[in-house]
Image (cartoon, rainbow, N blue to C red; front, side, top):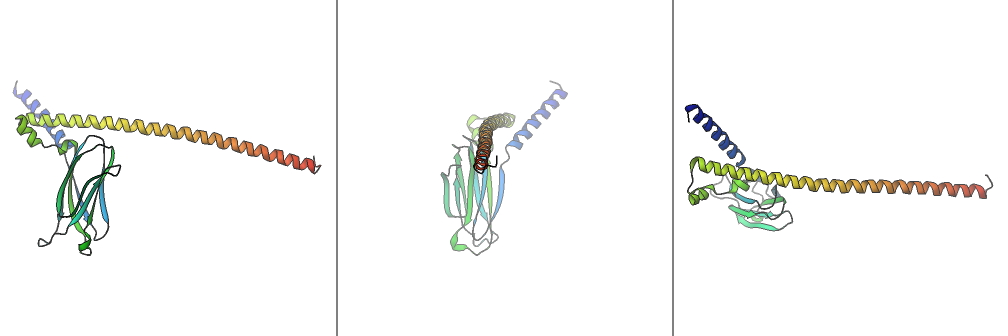
Length: 215
């Protein structure tokens, strides 16, 4: 392979690695928790997806770090993670339900009135939550081969997302068709009722005028 071929190959690999890194970026969220009340973050996730998140309280006062409570629930309300009186922690699970997964944070009651509390959340899902260092050690791969393996995982994740979006589109189309059918039936029934009421009114007025010998 000539120099030009090697340069082209290097450029292609560079683009692939950049694409891989782009899809594997985790979502970092900052929350300012009030002294009273709850703040939540949510993400719509489909079935069989690995979720990994780390959270930590960030305080300017190094001598005393406020504690918080955390609760993570599934779309059907199942409790996936619940901790109280903590300053940092982690939750990890594999989804078994498609929908919005909710993580709620609030300041512990005994320190209320101390002002807002900042919480940093590093939320990873799917391919971004995979421990690639362990994969590299276990399978003894590194460098370009490892990046290609990451890219393969990204492609699989994109394919799964497309399948999920397709299934959601089919569900929404089905709901829309059922709704349109019901609306059409309701319109026909409403029209029939209006015609029946109008006919009854004409019949009643006709009998009234006949009794009064007006017609």
